[in-house]
Length: 234
Image 1 (spheres, rainbow, N blue to C red):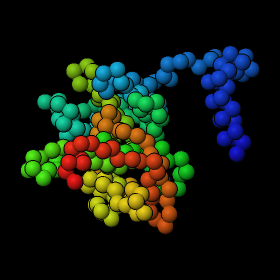
Image 2 (image 1 turned 180 degrees about the vertical axis):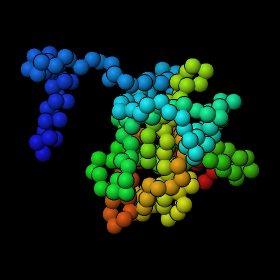
Image 3 (image 1 turned 90 degrees about the vertical axis):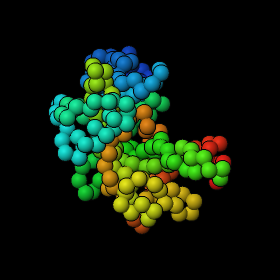
Image 4 (image 1 turned 90 degrees about the horizontal axis):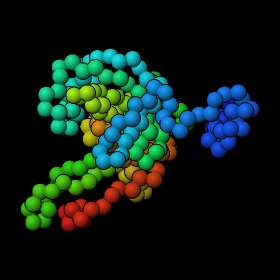
């Protein structure tokens, strides 16, 4: 309790009374920009995400993560993804809307951590045939948990990705797609140990909360977007 109170006082003082905080503690006021060691990556237009420390040393990706990154780069339009990829891993991310996201703690007891800010709703689409026979892309809801965030450089320009693990549900028991099941009209899942994959940071729509009851995690505050294509395909 004391630690939480101290953290709140520190955050409040640094943000709303930086001069007084500096005089009282002898610490230099915190700058307005991202902290040292951060990497700001454009995701289109004026939008950008910020990968925040802590971070790992630059290292080669390997095995399944390397294959997943090569697939993600190809999907992003990189025609000649290299056989060896150097990357820097981060464990916190500031989204386009300013919300902060973390990453899933390592170990089998990760679900016991109270602060779960690593569950994402993902922007995704799938093919659906309309009544007139035309095949269209419609938005769908996927959920995944972030393991870490990665920066790779392509032709000297940084690109940001999230390394995610899809959720398992009664609708998708292998966790191949991350499609949620529903109970009482609420999206839910029973595990975040599905297929691992890389996704562009721009596809991370929002951090969502979850509430666990009897082994089922209910997703909070997650409305699926509607579109004319979705409505016309029903």
